[in-house]
Image 1: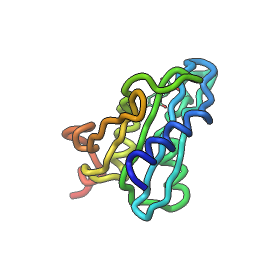
Image 2: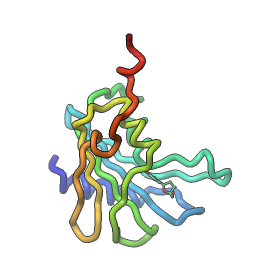
Image 3: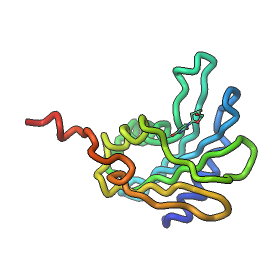
Image 4: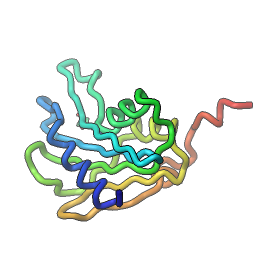
Length: 137
Ligand code: THU
């Protein structure tokens, strides 16, 4: 599974989004270290607060299945029903959830127009992060 394929799976996952309020669909494809892939989409709620992002859906599906080692995630977002037209950076809450389970060299592929995407590490996306190691003595 290369980055291009993972980005394609993130775009595909956008079709599953439940976004009656924002009309903004997000898809994620999470690559576990053992090669397994989990896709996620954003799922909104009339009370707004319970809305969950695509990235966390992908992570929580994987965690439930017992996965604990992750290599990379691809994300894609944009107006529902339309192609990705600009860079989509994951929100701060999702970055923090990634930090719970991933090392700083975990890779993020952020889709942009056409078949392009930007690559960053979690360390670049969440500098000076608080992690489980900070609770250990
Ligand atoms: N959203 C995500 O799915 N992931 C993010 O990292 C940021 C935002 C969703 C939440 C909401 O359904 C919509 O995008 C607009 O904020």
